[in-house]
Length: 120
Image: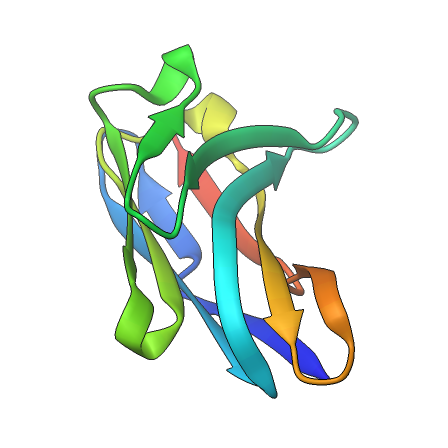
């Protein structure tokens, strides 16, 4: 079994910064794409940023230039550095990864979510 554990959420004032972390653990053969999603109250979950195992990244237009996704393959960990945060970015942030696990094959795994609150 594999799992993702997130950390780093919290409360910050508008214009502030937070860094989220998400570590994969368990019987892992390899970790493919790792993504960050967010879901604001009353809204659908949306993709914020993604990174391949080779380090290629992409992010939604609204966060380009402010958010940076990165990963440490040796630690099976993905990060999201969020700068210049806006109140409308208050949401639960979720980590996702496609993981090849021993005996189980490829698994789509989600983290438990971490709350990010941005006050004006």
